[in-house]
Amino acid sequence: MTARAADRARYDRATAHLDAPLAIVDLDAFDANADDLVRRAGGKPVRVASKSVRCRALLERVLARDGFQGIMSFTLDESLWLARSGFEDILLAYPSADRAGFAELAADPKLAGAVTVMIDDPAQLALIDAARDGGREVVRVCLELDTSLRLLGGRVRVGARRSPLHSPAQLAELARSVARRPGFRLVGIMAYEGHIAGVGDAVAGRPLRSRAIRLMQATARRELAERRAAVVRAVRAVAPDLEFVNGGGTGSVQHTAAEDAVTEIAAGSGLYVPRLFDNYTSFSARPAALFAQPVVRRPGVGVVTVLGGGYPASGAAGPDRLPVPYLPEGLRYDPQEGPGEVQTPLLGSPADDLLIGDKVWFRHAKAGELCERFDTLHLVEGDTVTAAVPTYRGEGRTFL
Image 1 (cartoon, rainbow, N blue to C red):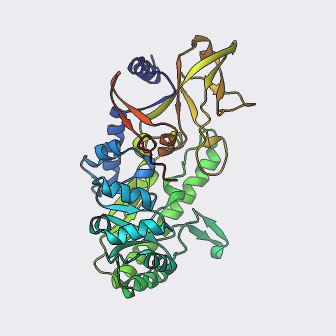
Image 2: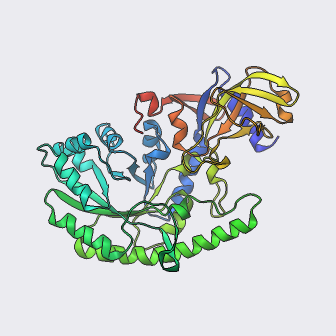
Image 3: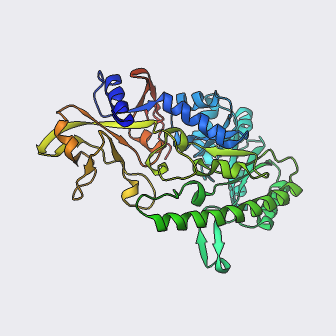
């Protein structure tokens, strides 16, 4: 029996009393993945990206482990909810225009002390000030550095379009804007190198493309390390009490941690390990989050149909954004239909061994987005479900 077949047998036994659709997290794999992130971080704390987890119970579990410290959130509403729930040291990774949220933040000492907001433009400071509604608490802010690699005099850009702040001088000028404005305190710098951390460099069946990605990433790492160090020096000249410099992501943990200028690493997807993280040479980990759909039809030889399953991930549309049939091994989508909202035909010889009501296990393309589809995560240890915990959705919290 292969390791994957053994996992399927465990998951089927653990959930035999539960009807699909359902989602699980294998806690042995989750904990092993957490240990691997800490190992790769080389002694620097890992800040957990809540967008990739979206379950308070599992955020609590990972933050209780040595090597993890703080949360990187994705909306201001989520940040305030987590702070009210008792979480501390929450870094909002994206700028916000949530005026009601800023009014609440500026009026509450506990929230203002726990949450740091992201800016990359003086206009965002003005928006926060206009939203205060009398609140006088000092708002903690972090500056975001654009990590994109620019070649040929800027005519070629590699990397996500996030912050407009690319040079040390630009970040230092915004740092001075924060220092001049009462009611704000600059506490950190954040830089997410998505073209390194979020792009696999070992694409199956594409050796030339994989080599080109590795060359690009090596060039980008060198350029960013030099520029990030210069940015930190420039900003510390304005704000010497800077508390943190955050960088990285699951795919670049060990590379980013090697930079002296970086004080902490952000990661989250490496806990669940969705399918987009299969194609890396720098690390490997165990899939921990899966979902099951029930077989509801057997249309013919070598075909079964499961209920639902059409859960595409965000990003540029393409086959890599689709969930992948994982267990039993050997199933594939019908190219004329793909995964559907209400039914998904699956092809392959393993279909002939599946009966009505059997479970087919899938992996999502991304990590936390799975939790937007399910109210509950069933936590599996060995071949037993030991707990059922709500996702954000299960707590009635859909922030985006």
